[in-house]
Length: 207
Image 1 (cartoon, rainbow, N blue to C red):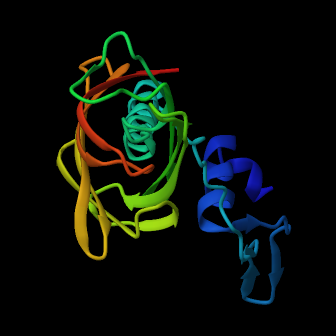
Image 2: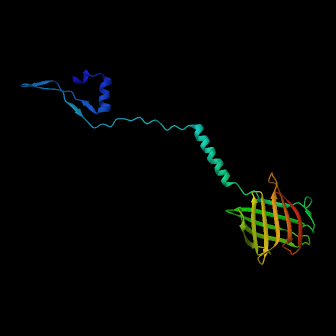
Image 3: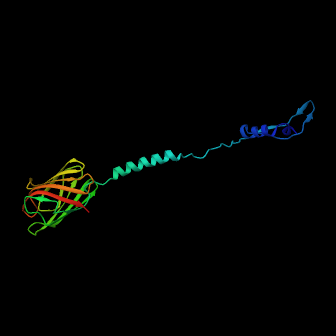
């Protein structure tokens, strides 16, 4: 048979890549014509080797780490966020100091939600609640004797806050964070929430 005249490797090559199939027919002689073996061509889809996806661990690790660092940086909380408590022993006032003050600052989107509670030097309750932009600007009073609040942000660890009545700043506070972010020192001057004159430096510790 004609197919047996081909080496197996060549026959496989023809089948795999050329789509050629050798069909066995014996030689026949019809008159003056000789019938030769027929070569059929069939549609054949050769197999293509697809190597598995190669994942380079070190490159993937570096990319993942870079994304994680970027995401962490974007999601980092404002340094003023947290609960702060007044420390009278470290504070210095020219006027009577408050008995107790707690400031709770929560970051909400692009704003800081500030809630101040405590007891003034005369025993009156301190209560002031407002929001202000993290980047600085006019804030919104929620509950307070003041009718307006505005803040500036000279640096990441410093704020300049003005509290207003009738469009005029009547009380100012300039809080600054320590290098470790655990202590907030605020320079205060003006008329506080209970109508008393205040001037001094208040120290708050992060809880």
